[in-house]
Image 1: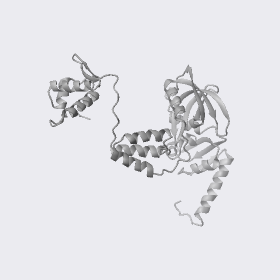
Image 2: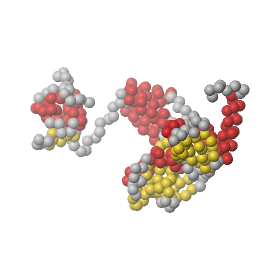
Image 3: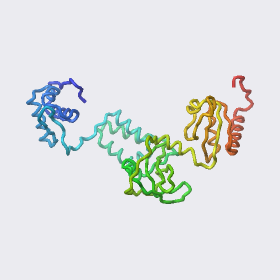
Length: 332
């Protein structure tokens, strides 16, 4: 892309100048003939001739008279083919392989799209990209659950249009039901896609896994999302509550210090005083929850959940057994 003050070298061919004239008009809508001439290193008459060449080639270059006039690209232009450098194309392939493990499957939407991009690249670049795609063996993310693209697009559009939707949903246990929701946002977290929404029937906030959505029907009703909504923070708060076992942990450390070492999905943190913090949450897996609490680098006490206390004891015995008969250092 040209910068202000750049000029084309005089040995450039007329065809190259015409293409660069197009780039200049596209990048600087309203550029005047004299500025275009200066950029191209030619006379105004020659600059107008290059604009004429572009028009003859079917590129709609419009001209507006007056002090605020100039050249601009008109409507109806078909975008030119995308051009990637080797590093750009390799970065794209790597990103797709890292985030979508069906990238080599031509029947998969992402694999099909990637194949089209590779086929459009110059042969030397395409050969390198195909070698990477063919020989790379990404380890699958077993926690990831990628939803149907059409379902996801429908929900993203409903969020943008602030339109209510009727969902068909299947739970992890296999139960199925239909529900009407106000879709606030689509959030991707650790390889899983969630719809953060308000359940109209329960008048409560919900987070639905999009890979479990069986169908989407966009309704006529509109809505307004909560003001100041932070979709990521709200999702993490939602995932921390409503599970089988309610948990409560008192930590001998200030709130800021605790917040830096614990994931927000464990629950809500609140200061009891300047030096003590309370963690309130819930879990369906006490052993997993106890393992997360080990991240706290301060003394803490589990209160109000016998299942979590028993899980912490089990985890503690495992850790002591792993350490063997090692004598603790005085500073521990």
